[in-house]
Image (tube, rainbow, N blue to C red; front, side, top):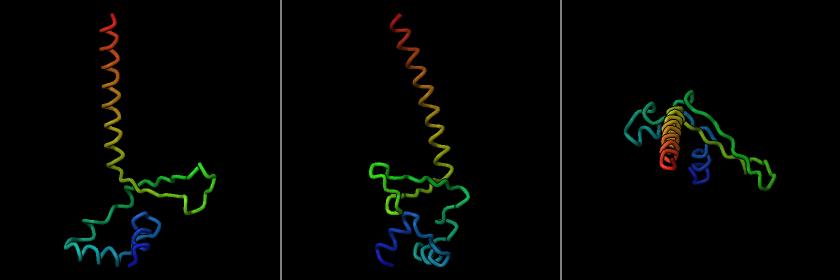
Length: 96
């Protein structure tokens, strides 16, 4: 596989075939299930390059984000919101 072909798979532009998953698993000494991401838990984000106004395929980037990462980030955001409120109260008390 050329570097270009690998890069396109890594970016999600080309889907990795079942045969390729099997070869990778064999090379890594593991199972396909261990290394393949569950597509039902993925979200796709389209990022368009608005600076150039060009929406051709070369300016589109696709990212698959597992559900557990999104949940983890939401939990972290909630912790930060609580900390901000606590700090606001502390500042208010110090000003009084």
